[in-house]
Image 1 (cartoon, rainbow, N blue to C red):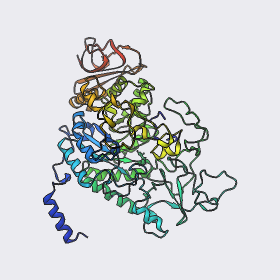
Image 2: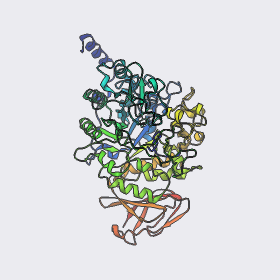
Image 3: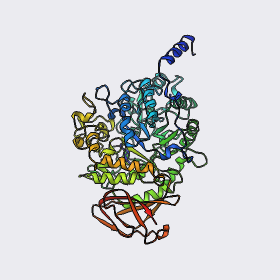
Image 4: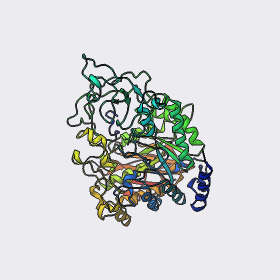
Length: 616
Ligand code: GLC
């Protein structure tokens, strides 16, 4: 599905003497753990927190670099490529979950919050990665899955063992409802439920089907917002709260610079489990707003009734936990990045925290949801995010969203469009998050048949929901076999454009997408105006060209982005900003645009980018 809408969302962690001695002996043999090494400063020279100036880079560890050639990426693979990320200009990496997991949802089903998945390496590999990152000035951010655990986590195994287990109340268990003959049954009924028993309410899972699974042993149902293998934790239980905060502290102590918080909007549910109102007239649409072929009004991709999730999404209690987590993060100078799927800016504003500080960087998916190159729509969304009162964070793609190269490039994506997107992402006032491979122009490679699909939502939703395999294909390092990702069999096929779009080839080509990203990031790091400068929209009625100033202490940079496939000429009147007719431009970075330009008549070729310094 060509959309930035979240895939699967249908409308949306007794010290004994011998142990102590062993630890001391080991400490003399091993290098100091990362946390004991010199910590990078939390504030820059001007007193701004580090994450405001950082360029973040998301890594899907299964797909980044495979050091042992088993076809699946790993931590040593990441460590060995930190030099590449350093040359790109990346300041922090966010690694999607690398904790022990049965991998039903590829790590988002955690079975131990304080260890490393063996497939990805060991805690020593993790420490090695953090230590190497410190040398290269690259911080490590982990992904904290707070909403749910794996159904094989020891907490859940205990919880489901008996109704009287001390862990029973760590999850959400309820009795089912007797079959109601006057209503059509909730499809698909759990085949294990006795005599047509119905789930406790009408909530649907965004991974398909009812959000409840019947457990024959204890004869109750447990709640799962995502996959049945991802039972929701009961955040109303203080023991859950304490256990999860201990896990967070474990990683902060180990040197992580922050967390990307997974699924933070779904931590709490209505205690009375009231039914969600249905949306009978809504129809699933693609990025362009067209109804999806074969979509049925009122039904999600899995044939379930669409509903407005007012009783299990975005409850006010979420904010209380996030404010407490922020207090913990602040003790370590750490950053919290929220997976915040909001419907409007008012909701986004709440995540920054109103009376109490909350998430520093709540992601604005409404920006990524501008699914077409439209100057008015991006201008409007940036203005809205600017008005939210917090520090903006921008991204185009991630492991749940069709890659930007395809979303904005349409059926025939071009590098010009990829450079235009870099021009926008890296010059806005806000922290940019790149998705691995975005800097190469990596494209989506959706599965061609259901048999090929690995993502559980694609298996369940095929063909309306093809799942997220397409945006998770292996990183393209070379034009050689398996794009240099592995010499084994890669866990997902390589995307088709790897022979032209890979690190090796693009590093040699001065006009490559990669070298444009490098130049844009370098520019951002060298120009305070591009980081801390005010954002001033220009020419706000222009339907094709998005233009703006970034102003900092009497210094101004002008950015002009032609979002159309035709050449455009724009006349910018900067008298309101104190620049007269004699104002000149000194080009700093361009793509498909002449370097010699005047604000009064700027010419941009299709998808052209001009970034220059404004001189009086
Ligand atoms: C988040 C993750 C997604 C995962 C889901 C369940 O949305 O980004 O990949 O499937 O949470 O943990």
